[in-house]
Length: 510
Ligand SMILES: Cc1cc2nc3c(=O)[nH]c(=O)nc-3n(C[C@H](O)[C@H](O)[C@H](O)COP(=O)(O)OP(=O)(O)OC[C@H]3O[C@@H](n4cnc5c(N)ncnc54)[C@H](O)[C@@H]3O)c2cc1C
Image (cartoon, rainbow, N blue to C red; front, side, top):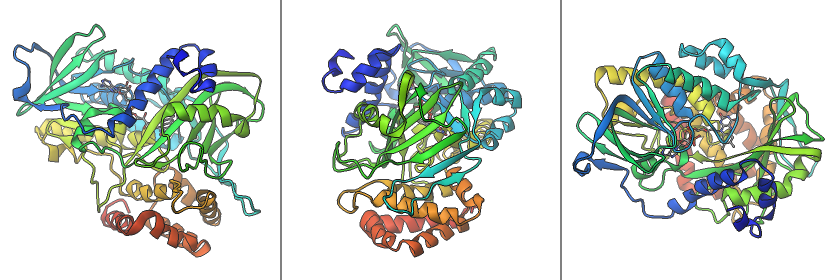
């Protein structure tokens, strides 16, 4: 596959050819890019089938309480259900569970929620933190003297070794006698019966196996065929394609500081009508440094959103963000399509459950579309998501309406989706510098407010009155945002924004 892209994506070809496992990474990237074809097809609707469709003579084995399809965030949930609550869990992954294509940043305070589950110790958590920063900052490119670098403490300031954390969870699952993990095993479909589900999978030898379970937890990420079917082929409204590397040998990085958001130019029009590219830079273990390039976009825009295309742009533009020195070396690529969903209502409007089936993580797409912290969202909600499923199993309440109550939906996070829409550059309504100018004004406003405003905004914990105060102050400083709201969100989008805020005001988390 690497040879095939040598002329279409010469920089990806060059850097990946030098990388151990470069071919396999490329295959994972191309696999994720299939998402773009899927969302333009009529959904096949063959992931959830009635029990009557179960093939005659199917040998149903491996009875379990909870079946997890997906071994990234699924491992964290499964570990709690197996170790703390004593359920028999079976977890599959089409690749190798616990081997993520990303690393995570989070604050230490948020990680305390893992301890709250009762199965992770403080020592285990400290051990997966490979670096802590003194501070972090956000800065958007504007060509005037008003450019504001906003410093933020206690936000994304711990670099977590994702595989090390997931490895701990995996060991906890495997130490429970009746729990099983099957790698290189792919979910194909499931069959619904009155009080259980039969899951059909294909193992690494191409053999079809059937398992009976009380609950199927779908944690298959953005490619989840279940989310696709339940949401009628539109499981996301927006996306944030993200690529980057863990590398060493830059000449100009500060290992004490996280660069939470940084733009270095106006909207880029080289791959469609326009996208506002944004960088992130996070020090990791030793002299490793993680750089990400991403952009927020509406699902239907005409921009090239492929990860492969974005990687080419990443390698082309990287030296303008961080200077690779003589000893520059890439250790591994990091990438993914971060899902975003804009709920057009007072509360959650996306489907996240069916009878005996429940979606978590990116499959549920309830993480913040602004900060894109899906790991943070799972960690924050893990005690609730595990005790909720335990109660439902205990009471035998496993219908769609019962299960959808166990969700990571947070009204404050849903409202943030509206801010994400301002970050999606739209050539029809925006000047090339619009996103940067607006965000620079937001940074100026936040700079004038107590630290809690910026910290809670970037940790997805903002209060409604603080959020409204920021909105009003930005509108006062930068009245163009009012016309931009009409232009970018339209009447429907503006009403949806108001409904989200009303839902937040009516919720217990305001
Ligand atoms: C580059 C990048 C950096 C990020 N950084 C942060 C961060 O700093 N902080 C933060 O909070 N969040 C971060 N996120 C978001 C976070 O990584 C995701 O929200 C999180 O990984 C979602 O986990 P998941 O298990 O739901 O889905 P995924 O991570 O997509 O995992 C899905 C799993 O399911 C498996 N799978 C898929 N289909 C099948 C199938 N048919 N059968 C069996 N298995 C299947 C896959 O192999 C995979 O292991 C980042 C995301 C990206 C892309």
